[in-house]
Length: 93
Image 1: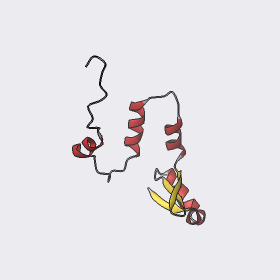
Image 2 (image 1 turned 135 degrees about the horizontal axis):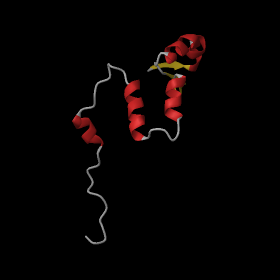
Image 3 (image 1 turned 90 degrees about the vertical axis):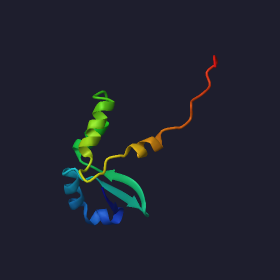
Image 4 (image 1 turned 180 degrees about the vertical axis):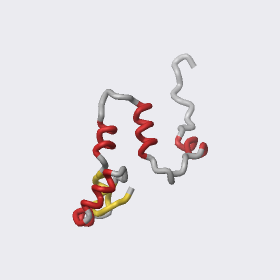
Protein backbone atom coordinates (compact mmCIF):
# COMPACT_ATOMS: atom_id res chain seq x y z
CA UNK A 1 0.00 0.00 0.00
CA UNK A 2 1.40 3.35 -1.01
CA UNK A 3 1.26 6.27 1.38
CA UNK A 4 0.56 9.89 0.36
CA UNK A 5 0.30 13.11 2.30
CA UNK A 6 -3.03 14.81 1.72
CA UNK A 7 -1.26 17.60 -0.17
CA UNK A 8 0.45 15.07 -2.48
CA UNK A 9 -2.80 13.16 -2.90
CA UNK A 10 -4.56 16.28 -4.17
CA UNK A 11 -2.07 16.66 -6.99
CA UNK A 12 -1.99 12.94 -7.82
CA UNK A 13 -5.64 12.03 -7.26
CA UNK A 14 -6.33 10.57 -10.74
CA UNK A 15 -3.25 8.32 -10.45
CA UNK A 16 -4.21 7.20 -6.93
CA UNK A 17 -7.80 6.44 -7.98
CA UNK A 18 -6.63 4.43 -11.00
CA UNK A 19 -4.36 2.39 -8.72
CA UNK A 20 -7.21 1.85 -6.24
CA UNK A 21 -9.47 0.59 -9.03
CA UNK A 22 -6.79 -1.99 -9.81
CA UNK A 23 -6.70 -3.12 -6.18
CA UNK A 24 -3.81 -1.02 -4.83
CA UNK A 25 -5.18 0.83 -1.79
CA UNK A 26 -3.55 4.12 -0.76
CA UNK A 27 -2.96 5.41 2.73
CA UNK A 28 -3.45 9.15 3.27
CA UNK A 29 -1.48 10.97 5.95
CA UNK A 30 -1.72 14.32 7.70
CA UNK A 31 1.49 15.57 9.33
CA UNK A 32 2.96 12.09 8.95
CA UNK A 33 0.11 10.31 10.73
CA UNK A 34 -2.23 7.93 8.84
CA UNK A 35 -5.77 9.34 8.74
CA UNK A 36 -7.57 7.59 5.87
CA UNK A 37 -7.38 4.84 3.26
CA UNK A 38 -8.56 5.05 -0.34
CA UNK A 39 -9.63 1.70 -1.78
CA UNK A 40 -11.73 0.37 -4.63
CA UNK A 41 -15.49 0.19 -4.37
CA UNK A 42 -15.28 -3.60 -4.68
CA UNK A 43 -12.96 -3.86 -1.68
CA UNK A 44 -15.08 -1.39 0.31
CA UNK A 45 -18.27 -3.34 -0.38
CA UNK A 46 -16.57 -6.60 0.59
CA UNK A 47 -15.57 -5.05 3.92
CA UNK A 48 -18.92 -3.42 4.69
CA UNK A 49 -21.45 -5.99 3.48
CA UNK A 50 -23.28 -7.12 6.60
CA UNK A 51 -24.83 -10.53 7.07
CA UNK A 52 -22.93 -12.18 4.26
CA UNK A 53 -20.22 -14.70 4.90
CA UNK A 54 -18.72 -14.20 8.30
CA UNK A 55 -15.21 -15.11 9.35
CA UNK A 56 -14.52 -17.43 6.43
CA UNK A 57 -15.68 -14.83 3.91
CA UNK A 58 -13.60 -12.14 5.61
CA UNK A 59 -10.54 -14.40 5.47
CA UNK A 60 -11.10 -15.08 1.77
CA UNK A 61 -11.40 -11.34 1.09
CA UNK A 62 -8.19 -10.77 3.01
CA UNK A 63 -6.42 -13.48 1.00
CA UNK A 64 -7.62 -12.02 -2.29
CA UNK A 65 -6.36 -8.58 -1.29
CA UNK A 66 -2.94 -9.84 -0.14
CA UNK A 67 -0.06 -9.29 -2.51
CA UNK A 68 1.96 -12.19 -3.85
CA UNK A 69 5.14 -10.66 -2.50
CA UNK A 70 3.79 -10.77 1.06
CA UNK A 71 5.64 -13.34 3.10
CA UNK A 72 3.57 -15.95 4.90
CA UNK A 73 3.46 -15.86 8.67
CA UNK A 74 5.81 -18.27 10.41
CA UNK A 75 4.63 -20.58 13.17
CA UNK A 76 6.94 -18.74 15.58
CA UNK A 77 5.34 -15.39 14.76
CA UNK A 78 1.82 -16.72 15.27
CA UNK A 79 2.86 -18.41 18.55
CA UNK A 80 4.28 -15.08 19.77
CA UNK A 81 0.76 -13.57 19.55
CA UNK A 82 -0.80 -16.25 21.74
CA UNK A 83 -1.21 -15.65 25.44
CA UNK A 84 0.97 -17.84 27.66
CA UNK A 85 -1.43 -17.44 30.57
CA UNK A 86 -3.26 -20.52 31.82
CA UNK A 87 -6.57 -18.70 32.18
CA UNK A 88 -8.70 -17.73 35.12
CA UNK A 89 -9.12 -20.07 38.09
CA UNK A 90 -12.39 -21.97 38.16
CA UNK A 91 -14.50 -22.22 41.36
CA UNK A 92 -14.06 -26.00 41.60
CA UNK A 93 -10.28 -25.90 41.29
